[in-house]
Length: 393
Image (cartoon, rainbow, N blue to C red; front, side):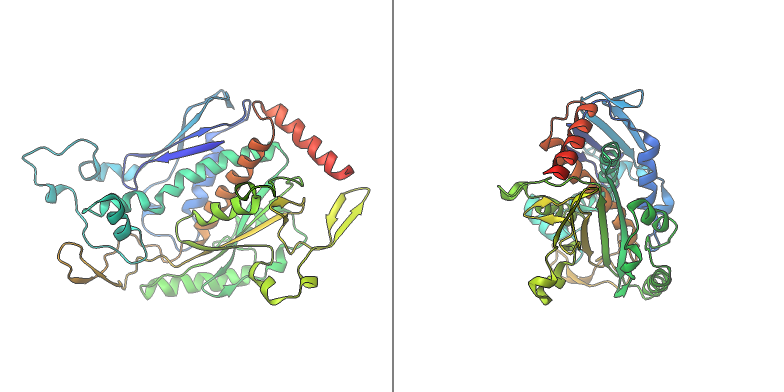
C-alpha cells in the first residue's frame, strides 16, 4: 500500500493517489473533512487558517461510499489560488511580460527552512520553487490519506489518538491518560484548545503561545500518539526495513519540523536500570499474553506486543519569526533579515493531528502488506484469526 502527493502551497490544489486499499472499505468525505478541520485548528495557528477551509473531493476509486480496490484519488483545492494564479501558473510566461513583476522571485533563504539547500539541490535561483513544495501545507493531503487509513483501522478494531504532552517546557500531567481508552482520550482532546488532556497545563500553554506571538517568536513541543487494539506480531525482526518501530519513527520524522522520536518511556531508558525498563510478561485465560507495564511502548524486536503503541515526536519551533534571523541573499551575497512567509507562533496542536494520521497510515500499510488484503472481509477475518492465535499461543 502506498501513496504519492502532488501540489504546491499556493497552487490550485493538493492531490494524492492511494494504491493498495482493500475493496469494500467504507469511505466518506465527511470523515476526511473532520480531520482536515482539526488540522487547521488548535491554539496558535496563523492567518491562512482563516482564509480557507480545507475540504476533500474523492475523484476516483470509490463508488457509492465504498472502495473498489482500484487506486483512490483525493483532491484538496486551495481557496487562495485565485490570488496566486499568475504567480504560480503552470503555463510559460508571455515574452512581453517582465518575470520579476509576476513571479515574486525569492533570493533570500530563511534559516531553518529548505530554501537554501533545496535551491542548491534542484538548481533553483528562485527559491519560491523550493518553499512552495517544502511547505507544511503538503501535510493537508497527508492528513486526508491518514483519515482513510483510520477508516480501515476502525474496521479492524484498531483505534488511534494523538495529544499534546508539552509546549515550550510546559508539560501535561500524562498520568491523566492512564487507564483511559483511546476514545476517552479523544473526547477530552477534542474539547481542548491545545489538544491536551491536562486542562491546567493547557491553560498555561495558551498563555505561553499568546505571549510568544506578541514577542514575535515561536515555540515547539511534544506530541504523543497512542494506537490501541493492534494484534501482537505486526512488523518483523528479520529485516531492518520491516521493523514496525523503524517504520513509525520514519513516519513521525517525515513531518515538517519534527526532529526527534521516542517510544514508551523513550530517552528515560538511558537513566534507568534494565529491571526498571523491560516489561514483564503475564498471561491469563481472559486476555492471553499481556505486559505488567508498557515502558517499551508496545514494541519488542521491531514487532507489536499487543499492548498499546505509544510514540512521541518532538517539533522544533517554527523557523519563520516576526523578529527575523540573519541570512544571506544568494544573488548579492549581502546579509539581510529573513522575511516572514507565515504567521503561526505555535503549530504543535495542529501537528499532533498530522502525527496521528501519518502513524495511522503506517500501521494500516503494515497490516495490508502483512495479510491478504484484496477485500476488506478477508482482511478482517485474518486479523481476528491473528488475535485468537496470539492469545492461545
